[in-house]
Image (tube, rainbow, N blue to C red; front, side, top):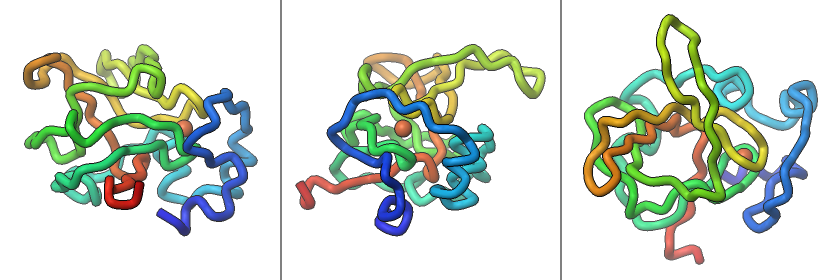
Length: 147
Ligand code: FE
């Protein structure tokens, strides 16, 4: 989204260097919705995200920093209410144990900016059996036609 990135000096689709930016700084740059999810691990309401029912061909990047996260051919139609992928860009994401809200889950964060993206579960489809359950707000889609 252009309006999310134009005032963001840290946004880059090519720079892989890790970012160490304080939440005070991110709060000045990001929209309130993106800040709440990316920096405070909030969750968007199910079935409301712009990429939940969406199957265009292209690439998904971190909405906070521009790091590449997913390719559209790993996206699948899930009934969970959030955009779901069976495979992530290994250089794009990392994982944290998350014991919040009385559940044991694995949090997925952007490897470059450490922003919260969603969670990963082991009930996905073949070939991986993995389900990356993401917040649409955390993602920025770029169609192949814009490459
Ligand atoms: Fe990021």
